[in-house]
Image 1 (cartoon, rainbow, N blue to C red):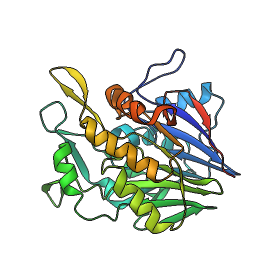
Image 2 (cartoon, one colour):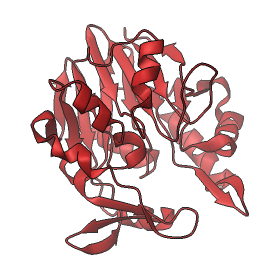
Image 3 (cartoon, rainbow, N blue to C red):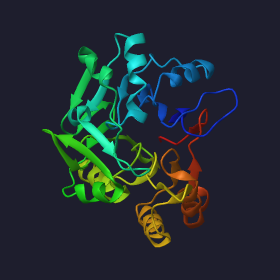
Image 4 (spheres, rainbow, N blue to C red):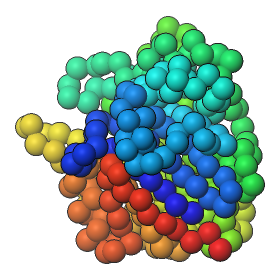
Length: 281
């Protein structure tokens, strides 16, 4: 399996960067595009990296936030035969209190006008050979959303986000499960529990994506989780047999350094333009 980071927050010479995430994944004969960043900038990076973003078996929107779905407007317009999988709830308006004031962070409405090119997911869905989309099924995640200051509007009412618009992309390889969850808003433990319920008896090889740890205090970046909470996360990942954790975007530098202090070289950075390989057999 090979993963190329088409766009991420970290500036890299010769490539565009923005607050967002987009990954190009090849596994066996399958090719997948996970998320499209905030704008169409990932398309320019793909060109510079020698990748054809239209030459994929499936595109996936991980959840209903602009920094993962905004770029799909340019993508769907450029490639009218393409199809994007998304949770049906991803169309709902999403909000955040990050930085203080409540503000909207939804996928731009123009994306949803490409109806013919959108495939909505309601349950565990197989999209390729041993490739699965696994939505949240854990109850009570609204409590996590409230703590994180994340909300969504349903039938005109503003509610704590229960992340029912979010899904995991999972590859069941001979070497183990590779789980992609772009922001992990609910926390890693519910995600892994859902994956194990859908694919029982399989060991975890790698987890790839942001961990939503980044926050601000007095203008400075902080990790929103305590050292004890991060240590418990690291212990849980070790118990699951994790060999690699590739993370960035909403994890933040402070969170990354804490994770690395507990997991060492198992933790690696997601950086614009980076390509890494994981065993699939």
